[in-house]
Figure 1 (cartoon, helix red, strand yellow):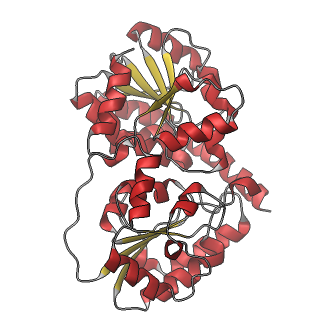
Figure 2 (figure 1 turned 180 degrees about the vertical axis):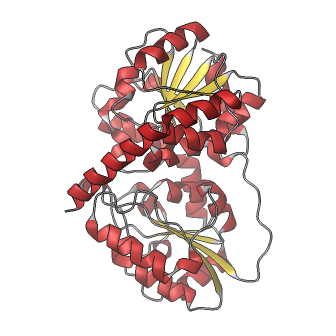
Length: 372
């Protein structure tokens, strides 16, 4: 039933995208938003359901423009293009024609094409000779998807730090490590610091259920109700709930659970669009094995890891920072907020990220692109 529902949703999404094409093209033309020249493009072929993957990089590419690089977005879905028009000033090209994209790239003299995922249509784009193909991904974690053999297809894979290099070279046979470029997390470079609060600010940001058992890292269905119920009824805390946008896409149980939690704890739903900014807001972050957990480490936010799957992150954290069954959660969160970031978590930041110095990750990416 969940599969049929997903197929119906996908078909409806495609229909909406087709209907929106004319208006989106008109909006691009009227706003003079189309790419005129781009040395470096960020390619995205997916619909709005996956837009968060692209959205994570928009701020970074805006800063690259400010630094003098010639960049643009190339999108193949009209609804994603429409959203990009409202969320970034970076010029863009929208088309469903791969041939048109190739012609434009030749005309622009494009030097690099960057990708934020391993979507199937990326591999059609990879036939283009000349530009360097760069995998950026949209987060750092120890999920199984982070060691895909597909990484071999790119000229370079930008990774967060030493842990990713170790993970990839240990798990992908015959991978050439010289293709890995450690840049840290550019998304964390331009965040606004939050002011003080009288309450302890807690962010619960579970990941989605994944599309297979190997990718099932989410705590939402099993622990979400207990986590939120304990915290919202305690006056010591201000709580924000930020479920992954894909939650419920593959599992009827997860869809039912997230719908119920959004209804029962509607006042806690995170109002912030930028996931990294939500982490900066928090005094304590409760996350699964996902990019949110690793970003909390990079940002020096005390982390309570909800996932019980084996990971080097979990192994490296103090025992009291691994959630387990959520018994006595409120007092544990209060203690963690009071004691701050443990030395073990600070060591993990050095292991997972090439740099956590503000501005340096964007600079490292800039240096790579400028060298092409």
